Length: 245
Image 1 (cartoon, rainbow, N blue to C red):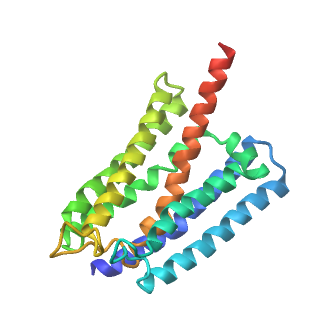
Image 2: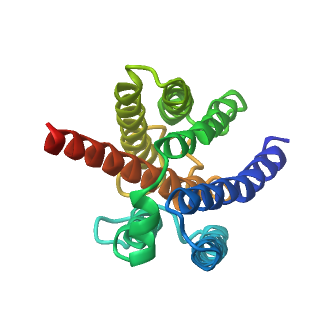
């Protein structure tokens, strides 16, 4: 029962999250006064990238190739997706002329709003209830994702209202979100089969099994790159304030 629900749940977000990211790019293009051609190019390239990325991640996940390595010298393919995917999105946003144009004008409200779907990680808690996911991972990762999603919503609301503490709440949302990733990756490694498996020996984590493996291999890089772009926008606004002062 849980396995069927989980596959449906993950597939919903493999469609929803890329759509939200593409919408964020389209909004940024409007803010940057990009041409229709530039907007279509940016959204089209991102859609193609997400399609190929998902296909490769799903294929390797189904083949069991995204499990943590058995030895220290093993190849951690899952980390290539997690950090490599994030780096690729950041590179496209900072190392290309069109990317710099769009990310330079990205609406901070859109960037923090992209963190709201992080509440999807609450499914880890459900997995714990069903006995499929060890509590050592489910509790910190599930609650952390929910907290990160709520923090993103609070920052979005504050920005919308023009609240005095809006910038502080954006920083808070980014810190919570990044800390959640660090905890989730650490507990994920320690509870999953592999050389770093030191917890949940009797009930190993299934985070690296399909379809849950799409969380670190596909979802996290999108959220992580949004954090980076949000922080860059915060630093840029701080630099402008310093110069004007």
